Length: 117
Image (cartoon, rainbow, N blue to C red; front, side, top):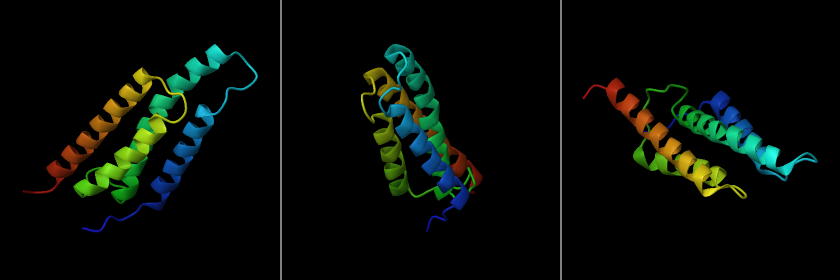
């Protein structure tokens, strides 16, 4: 089963990758502690949105379209790399990876319910 790429969600995924990269860059001239806390609070939801965009991009824009199992591995890998990008705390990476796993399982379950067995 060849995945159909949805261009809009693929572009959105690239946008989320750039946003995560910018948040992971060195803090601006302000307080390092405030920037770090803000970046951590924003990075976790951005990674969740990145995973959703990647799943929708490779699912042709439909949430209930299941993907081949080998395709889930690079999607989760891309998101995990961005979760651990530069100085991320262990708690943040653990929370992000748990969210990534949950989204992948939910996507697979939604796809399996939509297809008749």
